[in-house]
Amino acid sequence: MTTSRRAFLGAASVAALASAARPSFAEKKYDDGASDSEIKLGHTCPYSGPASAYGVNGKAIVAFWDMINDTGGINGRKIKFITLDDGYSPPKTVECIRQLLEQDKVLCTHNTLGTACNTAIHKYMNQKKVPQLYVATGASKWGDPQHFPWTMGFQPDYHTEAVIYAKHILANVKDPKIGVLMQNDDYGKDYWEGFKEGLGKEVGRIAKHVTYEITDTTVDSQVIQLKASDANVFFNIATPKFAAQAMRKVADLGWKPVHYVNNVAASVGTVMKPAGFDNVQGIITASYVMDPTDPTWADHEDMKAFKAWMAKYHPTAHLADLGNVNGYAVSFLMAETLRCCGDQLTRANVMKQAASFQKFRVPMLLPGVTVSTSPTDFYPIQAVQLQRFKGETWELFGEVLHAESS
Image (cartoon, rainbow, N blue to C red; front, side, top):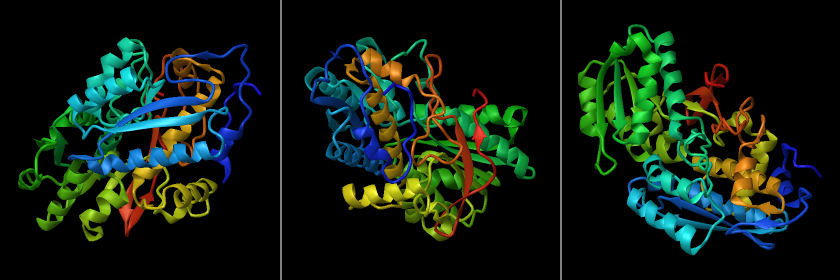
């Protein structure tokens, strides 16, 4: 067996990762966190606090590694996945990461969540030369191998996503006057800068821009300000709790703008349903994964395998929570990265393998969306498709849109 990339499809796809013959290397090489029998991975996630809706991501990743271990591990090694609650607090993230590296001695971190939280550990991880892989944030800064060669993103970057929304607005809304709600941190600012870039010379179409803090209780007053600006377009840059609040307030006010919400708050279970299905009809977002609530994918092999995994390893979770899909997909990529390391489980080789994918098919990504990386390209996914909320689910429309940089 060579180390070439293979796409595992169908109901047995994920289990194939564990049972596949291991790549052949002349000798075994290990860094902290790896041995003949075990690989340690570290993770932080807000299981509590204002962004606790994202806790579903971490729980899904735990369930994924449970499945991998049940089917033989990776190249015969069991995965020890250590996940800690940072409450979406950057100082707490720093504390957790120091524990994972210095006490637990993990090989690398995987899908640590939050822009501000990952920013707080960014320099530390690179100084320590520990892979900070497939972070759960779309900030554009994660794709900078020249300055941060140990950090890599996963999802489409926020900047590009916002450019796509801006261009869609200009092409489809007559005489747009745009109101923007933005979380006041690096995550929100990344969307904001991309949105302004996408508008280009039409940036004057922004009628009102308001912000909120993650520690705020509600965003009601901000939405009232946006409606008062007579905006006919609303760009909702918010995490799940606040995105749902904004949707409800828009409806309560009788305001009927063309409404766009960022992808990170597009979960049917944690955002759209709590906001009230009657209140969210027609909202537009971008997607790169299959939504389990969309009947389009009911007979797709990826969806069948995903639902079988959910039923066996994550039965208390809800199919409508998109965090389950995200956790499953990103963990599949992490598992393939480790599998391709063979017996050379060094941190340098983990990064080398992570930077060697070419149009790799990850289960649950939309058709036409693949993973490609290189030593100079740390943006694994650079394509999305727009979708509109209809009934109780999302409905895709248009073509797969690729980042201009790709």
